[in-house]
Length: 590
Image 1 (spheres, rainbow, N blue to C red):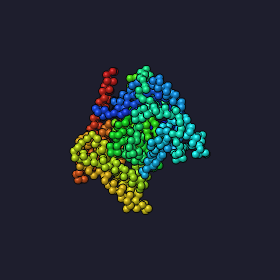
Image 2: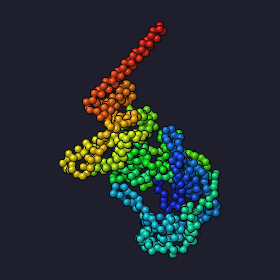
Image 3: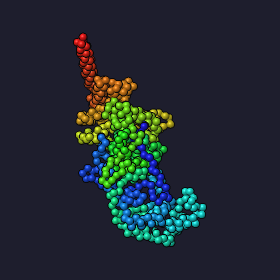
Image 4: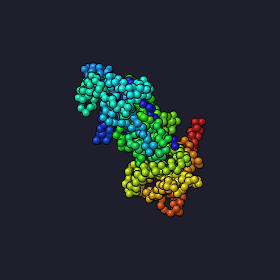
């Protein structure tokens, strides 16, 4: 299936490990808060530049300045703080006596793979595990002694050897206390004076009292950037294969694709998707809502909007947002700007559904509020679903059905039961569509099971096949007639619309581009819509005997045809009257 997600993320730039001042601005501290009135997250952060100047910011969530974009994230610059002269001089002096030493093996992360095929980074933590109080900034004297010890232990390795790595096992006898270094001792004493060891700066020796405000300092950090936060994943379940995600996305009416990214790292030899939506609703899950990056809107194709947020991936599997303010957009204290990103070309299908894509403007393509355009997009997605199903083998089908049953079907079905008991909710709109699409997908998967077990090498009584069949049996929407009678008019219309889409998909070769105003007249579109609704209601949503249903359907169809013919007759008369009027006016001129 073609992924209709597509926010694109670039890789993080690599910073040389031997460079004492990192190229990226460091986000030093973040403090999240939840507004008790709006229930929206608020973020206070300060970031430092290579001179150890601190820049304070507040990020608030409020209505976006972009029309129909919902909430947006707004960055307010609260001012800068610079080191006092004495602290700055001390820092400069001490930094000259330090270098970065981070090629110790215990520093390097390990990679593990779970049984589900997800790769995770494993880091080692422990008191002084990496030496030097686990700080990568070593005084030069101590670093030289450590290098000398390493070479003595491993004569074939030296600092110039490419890829050399100090092993904690090989160097376990290295005694840091034997190295007498005044620079290190001074830094150590300064750190000990700071409560909880939360020092500021490269060496962690500054406190907030070492700074003074500088309200005249303007902020711009281009081409560098500072971290705004992780977009995702937030939970183990936020990482999925493209196959599982695509089916979930179809079932939940393409809402998950609005929030999802594809990352470079494969999972089980398939494309991996970062999906931060709930499996049972398709909407953002609660943990994601508490993170600022999800409120950052995009510039789309609007030439008047500027991007000031970079989207990058870490380790090929995590998405982070970074703020980058250009020189042209320098901020002074008190300035507020809306944070905007560029989701990339892969997001175009989502833009088209929301009616702000290129084709919406240049080709007058409708968004999903246009029934004709929406129908054509959904037809394509249904074809992709059938194509995917046609190639599924037993084990892939088993894992797909298991995922959809446990994560999607069970919670959706439980929600539908609450509708049957009279508990109506706006969210039931999504659940009704999801429940019916599970039924439709289940029918297609049932057909694939029959094809698979027809092969003599497949045991139709195997545990996998039996499990698949049992799950698909549960997916059948047999309670729909009973449920339909309890729906309010709005929910009933939504369900009939979904059923009508299925009917028109089946007849797409006979009725091309149904509901498309560029192909069909308004009378034809109205007749098609009413006819398919009647067929859906009487054949799928009625519990009456089949003979009675056919009788009622026949009456409805004749009634629809009658009203269409009357509308056509009235239209023809109106045109003739206009022609007669024009002829009369023309004759009067002479």
